[in-house]
Image (tube, rainbow, N blue to C red; front, side, top):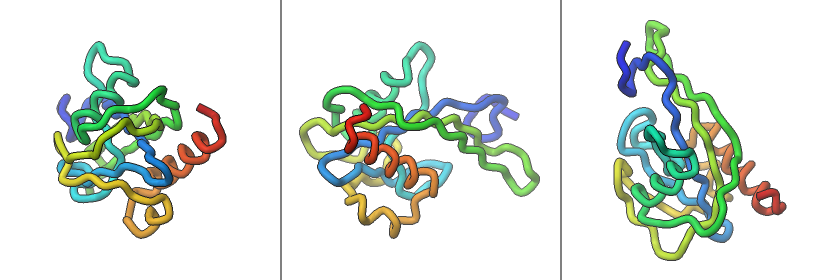
Length: 149
């Protein structure tokens, strides 16, 4: 066991952001494990002394070059646990997902992203997203659409 990302000694906190512009959501193509090469939400690990909201805003800026316009809404907390063939925990993240509206500008892939794209909500089923990612995006869309922020 290690204190790194793989085979950790305790869960790591990851913060994801469901960023909307109109009826589209911002997705990144993951450049690092887990789920390397897959489309996902922008986000990353919380740093010591940083609130989860500060993490969300920092990660959006690092991974996409965008800001968040206004407040963030807490959408969900998801446990992501991946085991290896022997049953050992290879990755364990507690994912805190926020939703918000994109600030001005166009996104540019940065940080550990291999790509970035505005994606219509209607296109999500064909992207092969992790099922929990698609579910949290739809939950966020319903929350923001109904003014629950």
